Length: 348
Ligand SMILES: Cc1cn([C@H]2C[C@H](O)[C@@H](COP(=O)(O)OP(=O)(O)O[C@H]3O[C@H](CO)[C@@H](O)[C@H](O)[C@H]3O)O2)c(=O)[nH]c1=O
Image 1 (tube, rainbow, N blue to C red):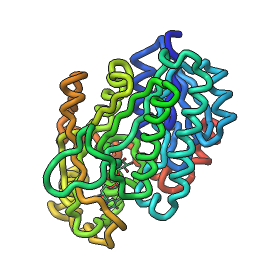
Image 2: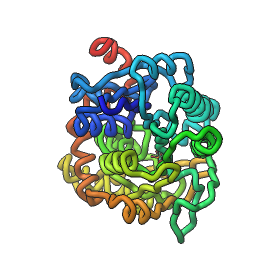
Image 3: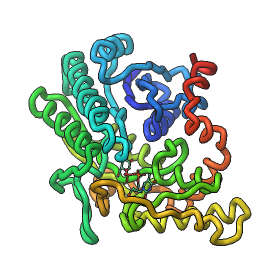
Image 4: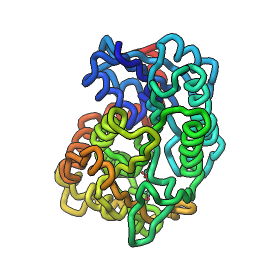
């Protein structure tokens, strides 16, 4: 075994794509997926690779330091790719403490265990996968670069900014080798349908209202999740110790335009009259403190590591819609909340 990599949050949306890529691409690495399987974590996302010889799963909450120590010991962990997080901004508004517990305390626990376990700290890497939301909100002009000062606006982004700061503090104070990436909005298969794109696909299919916050003028930069996983692979292997990399799609959309595009694609796929699904669009009360615009300058990772998105948005969004339409049972299960039962039957 060359490396024994602990990937936290590996049963979640982005995490599962990272786990799959590493398990398939690096048969000589031991990949340990550590996930507490909250509502958004789902081992079904990994059923195509869960029999692989280099794949292991451990159901542990990163807030539980003692159990983390056992995992480090059992698997002799040599690197961490840390993705486990509470990730939904709306949930952070109604329950900020849950975000502090997982995103801040969980990250610090993980850092503590890593720093105690790794005697020669420069031989190991702690990679924190973070978000562009730490930079705050832009108006019409400009981009977030790696030098943009942090200015988090929601409890979610404050918790992620805090975890980024802890990672840097551990590099500075204890000599831990670290790297951080901050990525824009991801879309693709296996995203929990509380997030805009899968929520809309699900609701269009079921003729339910499409809730657009405020006037739908807020702008997000969208990246296909497998392109993000490729960026993580590159940063993990070739990123400079101590560096930060911004990852984005150079693909800005107003929310209302994304929702209209999804309606158009779905009208065609479902054999509806043009414009039929758009009747479901419903403008609702705005999210509290709603950030207006996120836009990532991803030139640095392009110039330094040669990474660029491989899919156009047109291709990625078609693939995404097709995946959800072909996986209605997955959508039904995760939205009806009976995933726990399914998990126990299939994996328990
Ligand atoms: C769920 C929902 C969202 N929205 C709006 C709010 C946002 O402006 C936009 C996208 O919302 P969300 O899908 O919740 O994603 P957003 O708040 O941008 O945050 C995402 O992107 C971030 C990266 O920028 C990640 O760090 C977060 O974990 C991820 O959740 O759509 C609506 O208008 N209606 C909705 O029902």
